[in-house]
Structures are given as C-alpha cells and as structure tokens.
Amino acid sequence: MKKLALGLGVAVVVVFVGGLVFEMAPGSPGTPPANAALQKGWLTHQDPLGFSVNLPPTWKVHTDPATGRIEFLGDPGTQVIVWPLFVPASLDPSSASSVLLRLATKIWPEAGWKAPQESGRSAVRTRGNDGKHACVAILTWATSPKGTAGYLYAMAAPFDSYQLSEGTFAEILKSFKIAGTPSVDPRSSVSYVEWKDPRENAFSLEVPAQWRVSGGTFRFASVDVRPALEAVSPDGQTRITGGDSQIPTFTEPTPYLQMAGFREGSWYSPGYGVNMMVRRYVPGAAFAREYVMSKVARGCADLTFLETRDRADLVQAINSLYAQLNTSGISTSWNAGEVSFSCRQGNQLMQGYYCAGILATRSPGGTQWSVNFLYGFLAPSEKRALTQSMLEHMLSTLQQNPQWASMQQNVTANTSQIVSRTNQEISKIVSDSYWSRQGVMDELSRRRSNATLGVEDVMDRTTGRQIKVESGSNYYWIDQHGAIVGTQTDTRPNLDFRELVRLP
Image (cartoon, rainbow, N blue to C red; front, side):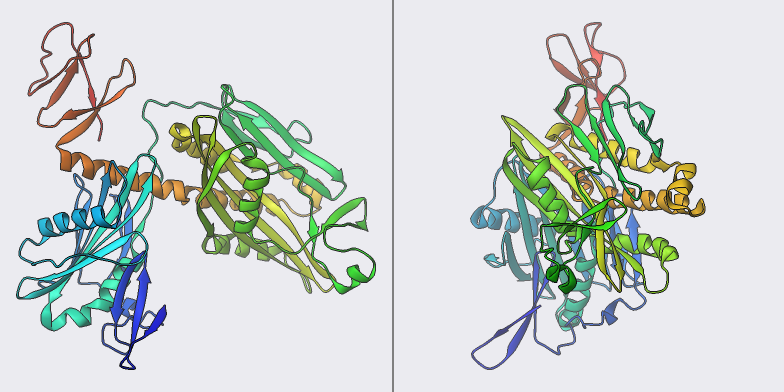
C-alpha cells in the first residue's frame, strides 16, 4: 500500500490487488481495514470451474462454464464480474483499451464508458454510469508466445452505496484465486513401475515405465547421507530430478569459525567424517532460483523466471510434523520456495519448475542448514503439464524404508511416518504451483475464446490431432482427405468418414 501526496494536502490510498488499483480516501467507509475486518464472517467458495473466493455470506455466485465468465452478486445492483480472455496476439495499452471498451459495453451497454486510462503495468481501466449505478472496469493482461491472456474485472453498485462497496470489492478480488491441477492430454496414458534405492534400499517410489532412472542414497559419512534421483524420458528431452548428492550440509558463519580461519566458502569438519560448507542461510525460493541458473538450465538460452514464490503457507504443516523432533536447546524449522521458468534449447521452447525446502537446525553452537528436498523438472513446453503430473505422482508414492530409518537415526518408526507425511505435503506444494494455476487459466481462456469465436475443439482419435471446428452441430466427421462435416444425428455422411471426439 502506498500513499500519494496531492497538492491540496489530501492523501489517496492506492491499494494494489492482483494488478488492480483501487483509489480511496483514507478513513473512508470503503477503505479495506488493515486487520481485514471486512472478512469477518465471510465464507470461502470453492467452485468446480477452478477458482476459490471469499464472499460476504449473503452474496451469490453465478458462473458460465462456456465462456468462463464469473459473477458475484450482492445487494440489488451490486456485483463483481471476473471474465478471463485470450487474444491470439500481443496487447499494448492502446489495443487493450479497445478490448476493454468492447467487453465493458457488452456487460453494461448503458454505462456510457469513458476513455480508458493506463493503471499500472499491463492494466487499463475505465469508469461509467447508467444514471443509477457507478461502474468500473479494469483489464489486466500478460503476453506469452501463444498470445495474450488476461482478465476483465468489472464492478458496479448504486450511486449511494458505491463508496461503501469499494472495500468489499477490493477484498473479494484480493481473495480470488485460480486453483486446481493442470489438465493432462487425454491421449496420454502413463504407466508406472516401482523403483527402489539400489544403494541402501532406503526408499522407493513409482517412476514412469521405460524411463532411465539413476541415483539412490549417497553416503559420505555415517551421518551424512544424501538421497538423489534422476529420471530421463526415452527420447532424452524430459528430465525429472529429486535431490542432488553434490549439495552438502551448510553451517552459518560465526565469530568462532571466523577466528579459527573458516570463512564463508571454506570447508569445516565437526568430526565423524562430516564436511560442511560455511555459508550464510539461503531461503527456499532463492536457493531454487540459484539451482536452476547454475545446473538445471545450464546450456539453455533466454532463461526467464515466470514466478518466484515463497511457500511459507504450506511448510507450516511440515514444521508441525518436525516439531515432534525438537529437544531442549535445539529446534528445527523449514522454509520452502519455488520457481517456474522457461528457456530454449536450440529451437525447442522448454518449461520447468523447481521447489526447494530448507531445514535449519539451531543450537547454542550455531545454525546448520541443509536442502532437505529439491524436486523439479525441465520438459518441452508441449509436455510440461504431463511432466508435472508425473512429478506429483512420484512424490505421492515416495516411501522411506522404516528399517533403514530406524538403523540410520536410531529412533522409532514414527520418523518414517513423518517423512512419508512430509512427502505428501511436498506433493501439495507442487500441485499448487504456477504451472498448475496457469493450466486452469489456459483452460478458462480456451473455453471463453471458443465461445466468443463460435468454435469448439474436437480430436481425431486416429491421428491424435486436435482441431477447431465451427460450433452448431451435434456430431463431427472427417474423411481421409481431411474434409470435415458436421451433422445433427449420429449417422455418418458415408463410409469414408470417421467420427471426431468433442473435447470439453
């Protein structure tokens, strides 16, 4: 939140909500309070269309799966609209303003919309009124190699209550989240086989059949063991990894170590054959980014980080699990973060994801920290969603051998249960990644674009090719020459035609 001083000595609070901008005078009835009192008693709505939102208990939700348009309805005349869109071209403020006016007019034709103005990066806004209601419409967008995806946000309320409604609008849009998992090509059928650690039989998991898998438990000392795994697709283009045997345990610099000559970057041994690198603590998101730059995307061109996100929200569950291992004077805590990125290998667009979890152990003698989970993948863009589903499956089936855990840590088998439950929490982190949310947004945009253009998607089961056809028919057929025919009944035009499958 930032305050801009005006010439009259009045301040305007500018609230940024997911790229949107709401201007309100401080202390006005519509200003969102810092303690989020507006959400007291609000309800969370989880929608099958793939989103969640917090709403006052009297508000209703109306969705149109065909277009992806979402309406939140409050008191008579008070509503919020969220409408995903996709344009197969790049937008700039000028062209985005034209799109905004066209869509805003479609929603409220009588609003008398004013000329749009730029509102932050990649956002334009316009105001209007129909004589009874005040209206605001905002368009935000982001470009990609496929085109431009965006969201139209529209808000309206009666004149006498609009200012009171502004805070509610801001809280609703701030809570709106795309959720779910990416859709995987229905033609893809992946079979899995069990893979066991060939070195010490410390763990097992299910991996894609026919993939080349290597790794296991690498033992550098009696108490320094590092599990790692690499799975590579048969064509060598896709790579999934977990852990890295070359990453040691770290110890933070202390005055004692510095006096003894152990500066940052040097190696220090506390005994038992263990060697630790002296290095300042690095949180999960920063470590994941560093790892991608130094190892995963090495040899790639045009590396672009699409999202870097701290995942403190999800490691809370892991911290509660590991709190069971805390003893007097010694405590452990987790920090996790993730990155989603793209790059190019030759002419191939690649997309990837990595998540890192840092476990810090603090004691009177100092802090030791280690990268206790590091999972991710790099895949061709057209295989990204399928690869992510494979990673999620591998994590969900990862199990530690309780006999090995008991031998190694000399604790009860509950430790193995903690590790297994931790892997389940890690799997949740991956399933809530940028690519998962982007997959849902792509699906919403596809449906809205089809409805706008009057087309729908069908698939040729013989070739696996996906085709857009003009909507209006109940059945679609294709012959050996590629001619497509639509019919209202399930009777094929002639023997040369085969039926096309309609996609949802």
